[in-house]
Amino acid sequence: MVEAGCAAHRACAQASRDLGRVGTVHRFEERQVTDSGNLLPAPTATAVLQHVVRSIVDDPDAVSVDAREDDDKVYLEVRVGSGDLGRVIGRRGRTAQSIRTVVRAAASRDGVDVDVDFVDE
Image 1 (cartoon, rainbow, N blue to C red):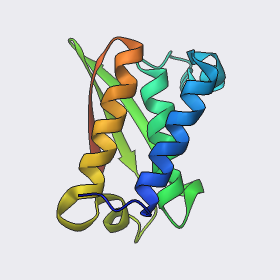
Image 2: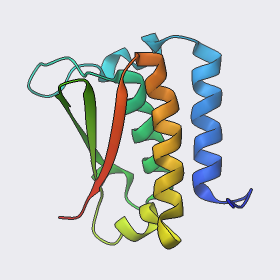
Image 3: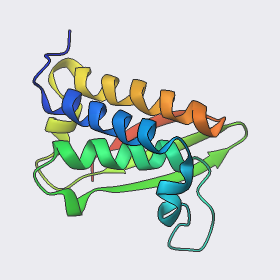
């Protein structure tokens, strides 16, 4: 069970409020294009994932999310700064599972199926 005061819960609640307030993807349009100029396959899910992970870690500037599309699924790979991976995964993977659940819900807005991987470098 997720504690009401945990960082992941607060971050998810804030992302949910932001999406509910805006109602469309337009708020996140500046993040829809990757560095290579390609359109992101799941802009809402990517923006929510970045928001949630950045609010959990100690070094939010070190967070990067890479998206790749394969057949009918979008894979989002999250990389964080050194020492922050354990914080993002949480005890027994509970935080990571909560993040995956929220991002999958956000991906339904994009009409895609999403899988989130936390990559250790």
